[in-house]
Image (cartoon, rainbow, N blue to C red; front, side, top):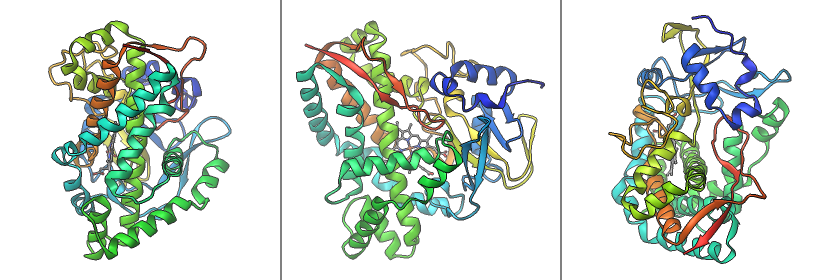
Length: 406
Ligand code: HEM
């Protein structure tokens, strides 16, 4: 298929702010698109994303590059080869199953449900404080706080400083944001991270006396030589990054959709049982991770496009979730979809998100409490919402809202 999509579109700040017209163009013109001259391919249709995640030999999770924006506005690759090592999200079989086995039992829905009273208490406290003020920046007062607090507790970190953990998590995802200049990327990649040293101390202490939490599970796996200490550390930092910022994004995106749609708010206040379905639609429409990366060890093809060895492939979850070939009226909220969870916001295949039950629980609780305790949630007219400029995360940087107390 011939197409002339300019390579600069991928990282254009305006396209990042509103990527959906670009995704539609990719669906129509280049479901597998080679960004001109970059060694980078995007995959945008539901069918081809699903195929790629199933072919784990051809599309490896073992990342070997980061992307940055070059002076011409094009994506360029910073190759670090095997320096990153493989750990859980970046591991391929057979190692991946070992890493997943170390954390998965701690994250199943049944275990997550035990956290419900804690999440309710925290959400209630934050919503009560926000209602007293009325007009608030949602991300600062609620959205950023609930997921980071819960993931830190769930891991079992002792005496954590949530601001520092948040900054470290966001720095991690900024490296995958693909919008930094080369110098900015290198600065972040090489800067010493005090939080990593702090996590190393937590792991060291847990190895002496492993508790019944995620930290304890990882410590036991290290003690038993099931995973190396370096892998254990990377698994913990991945949990922190992946567990904090993504759910934060979901909470903000869901509140933004509600603030833009008073009738939907009212419908959900009358039918709170549909809030989980609404959360699935929010995940589909504004997928918190827009893409994740795969490496190509050998020449392959996808959707009749030849992809040479050493290419970097971006699986665009956010685009696949708006694919009209898969979803009727893909740009609309529809609480009546036959299978509401049939989206790829949590990925698909062997790397499907292990934290989905926790994210779903947090979203249900926060949205239920917010809707119960307000008559309306509106955008603050003086101060427009803004998005983080990242190819990776779809997160509100600021979401000023007015909460109308019931
Ligand atoms: C709305 C919230 C979330 C979204 C949208 C999300 C999204 C994703 C996606 C798309 C993947 C697939 C990665 C791939 O195929 O390369 C993934 C994997 C993963 N997520 Fe989540 N995630 C969320 C919440 C969480 C939470 C709360 C945790 C931690 C408790 C978590 C931990 C992980 C881990 C460790 C993986 C790697 C799993 C593996 O490789 O087997 N995520 N997530």
